[in-house]
Length: 118
Image 1 (cartoon, rainbow, N blue to C red):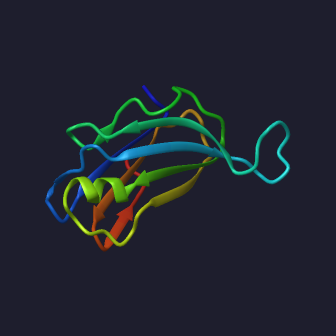
Image 2 (image 1 turned 135 degrees about the vertical axis):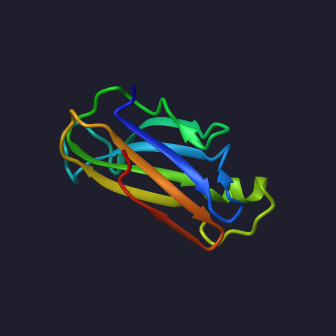
């Protein structure tokens, strides 16, 4: 099982958000040895019919800072909604690599929220 997973719920339509492109990145500290500025892409997937990305990146990750980037513009266009946020980026710190980290997104055209899920 992936160490980091996600799912997206469309709260405006009251259903899972299928087909959302999602990218997982490891964020690097400035000057971190052997890395390019910004981060490294670990996975790029789309949410399934249940709005989930169950296999999202590696099964094991190191402690550090990560981000999940949701392509909400593409999703809104596909569902005929006018969205205010073309992209949602959730940056978080992973402190215990032995734990599972679930990053859900509750989405509507003019608002979003997230939390650490289980």
